Length: 199
Image (cartoon, rainbow, N blue to C red; front, side, top):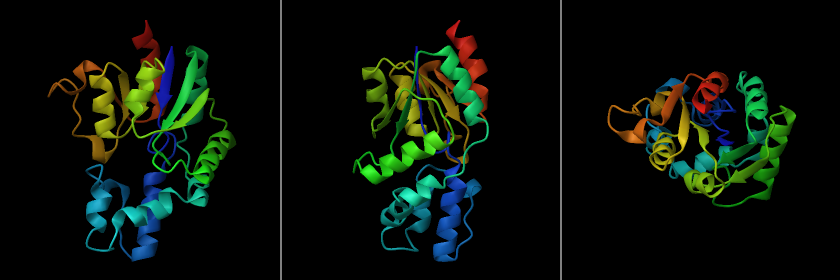
């Protein structure tokens, strides 16, 4: 059995880090709880900077920024527990997916290794569902709402890490996910749910 684990918003607590960087640069006071939709930052930045995506990329594709991303405290214990239950852990991230930037990939790997996160493979891809299906990955831990719904609709079982921007995903109520999305407060809740679901 294999699981895919996202980094940003799941292992790395980098949303507050990103808000701090934006506030420092622009003199604003945005905080993580303001991000009520996944693309909220782009909308917030539209009237403040010429190219919101370029500004966000300055942070998200800066190896130093990535190396200093805060770590979600329950992640190490959770990943070690899952490593004992599963055949493989694949880190599946959209970081550098479109550029395949070697410096970003190296910083990402160094960050995972620094915290001792066990994994079999790391991949940078925008299409996490296709990757998981191709590699026979049954479970995905994710925070992006569209990715979670797409993965669940295609047969994966998804642990959706709660965030203000994904609270509109209600599996079952609208038919999204086909009963395969399990909301968790943080990754630390996943091993027990995973063990129950695997029985």
